[in-house]
Image 1 (tube, rainbow, N blue to C red):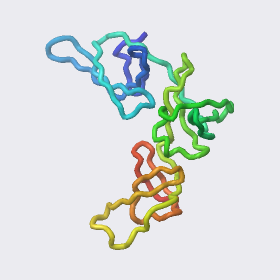
Image 2 (image 1 turned 90 degrees about the vertical axis):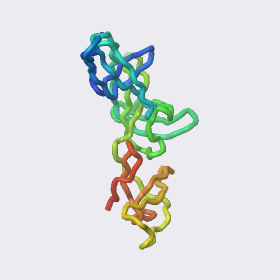
Image 3 (image 1 turned 30 degrees about the vertical axis):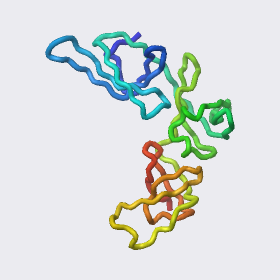
Image 4 (image 1 turned 180 degrees about the vertical axis):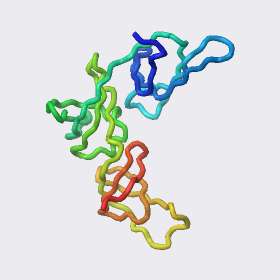
Length: 189
């Protein structure tokens, strides 16, 4: 058992029988009344839903031990996405709802899977922050077609996802995409 003094960002706790990750917290000592800790909690794999909760200072919390393991995406079927551990070659099946930006995941993509170690259950799977993609279709950009310098157009990438790219990107170009924001990052030469 831990107390609110042990709270850290990224820590996972058990609350009402569910596992939550602490995204933000603040110790508050008002001029009148007892101190408390205001937290923002997120259910792993269920972004961007945030829940706020307030604990009394010194209250007991139940930390959850989690482990992050590297897995490689192998294929998808009706049961979900199938992954293989990169060292032990163990195969697991993960529900698509537990994977952020699932449509940006390509075959062979390495993801980090978060496990609840006591229950051996999957909490979430995260793609790397930046992934390389190939543009499979985009309208050609025409010179003089913009009123501003930051104009973007839709582009379909090799996974089938659609993202916004600058006008100079053409079909067949290789680009990097930020998986956290789903935005164009840079062109690969």
